[in-house]
Length: 124
Image 1: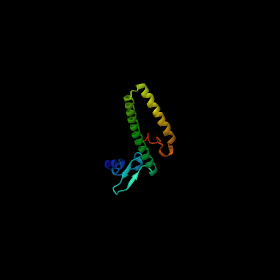
Image 2 (image 1 turned 120 degrees about the horizontal axis):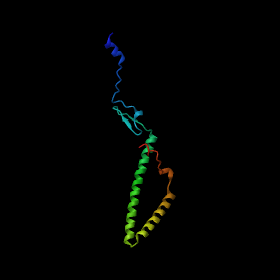
Image 3 (image 1 turned 60 degrees about the vertical axis):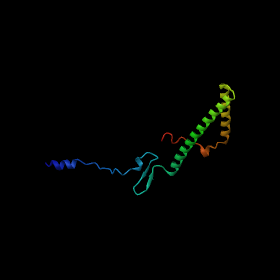
Image 4 (image 1 turned 90 degrees about the vertical axis):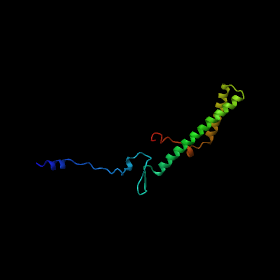
């Protein structure tokens, strides 16, 4: 019996995958593939990409507005302390001021144009 021939026929060498080939379906959502010829493959549709970018733009705007709100409250508190108000009175004044602003902003708020959905919270 020819053992050399028997081993060659029973052992099948695995196919070596080209390390430079990438299957777009295996990539996480949001990744892109840049090919050597300059072409680009995207795992998201243009609509999904636009929604994704709008979501993070809205988050950035919210962070800036929260920072401005915090600074406004800090400066208002300092002004009221300089005018001689007690800490309890300051808290009541600031709370009323924030409620008034919240009421005004809810009247002018358009949920369709800048409403934020949490579609991407779990994905990214």
